[in-house]
Length: 464
Image 1: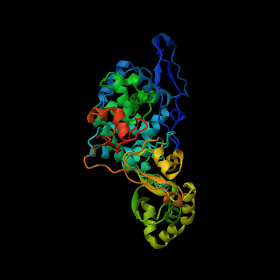
Image 2 (image 1 turned 135 degrees about the vertical axis):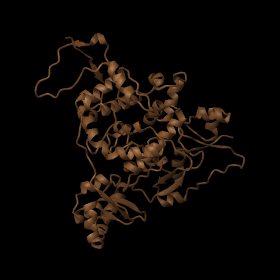
Image 3 (image 1 turned 180 degrees about the vertical axis):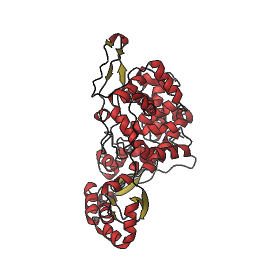
Image 4 (image 1 turned 90 degrees about the vertical axis):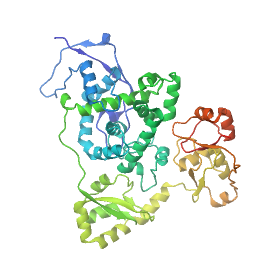
């Protein structure tokens, strides 16, 4: 019997894709996988030594295509050679990763399912977090995207996810999942197609719209595919492949019956400084359990800033806490208070108290930097910006010395009552807005003092 083995080549797969993810770092899969032509196949006999795990390898394209159709719901699960390559990756070459996802899925899938149902979204979107973060709520990419759903700082703030030295809402499973559902629903409204919406989740709606235009306004992902960035071309096939691998694990001899789970927990409302290490020690629990239950707490400290935070605490630890509540909380409130303040201020810019500036229509980052006599680079660093794009109403922190700020007069731009404005929506481009407003792109840029074509959702533009 002749067996033909398809040779596959992977271009620069990141290390996390070759091994189970570590707890502290996850980099999403980023590269396409190319299938070599049948002429390059090699004839060989299968050999399975006794100490090597049996890996089924007789799945024909027809069988894989049929299996995908059997589990397809609302999102198309297209089969082609690219998808086949990623199926091979998740079921053969990195089987351990798929197994790890099976063990972890019960930690977060019930939460994902709850919010997907709330927003009337396809249930299969729950698998997207596997591609984004490996189901790691503390995952951080090289591009500084964070959390289960890999929100960048700007997109996170737009959907209500706040970040400071103490707390990062992008690492909060519940808050970030709801934000991801809102974003995905918005993207589907823009494109009317789930595959294009997924592509936009990866690279941004503007990038996908540009690819659609280049394709001659084709309507499907696979028609637009050649015009998308390399990473985005791989994104949807990975999503399809991981759905296949998770649903047909048993057929590939990699079914996992063991499941990771959270310890039973209760909640504690905290509106004062709280040191988690001390709380763990005095309640007889381990700090790792508190960290696992509360991934959004960045430095094991709840700030005493007047806000109320909900802390999850194992049931047995809550019982111990209730037995001596006053003494335990008093100790946890005192420990690390000064040290955390020192660390927070040490990580902040060292050139003066922060002044909050609210971006006005027509503002550009360079103009604001000039007003405060600071550099654009400093403004971007202080406000965690990855580009020069800002939008009206955005709050920027400026750490120029107070006396320097006092010398600068910041006068708001006054608009006449009949001035027309437009609020930028996700996916909007200047070209789209120019058609709606009946103005040229250059006229809109002139009216708003724009130096480039970058726009930010929520930005207010003068269009008349």
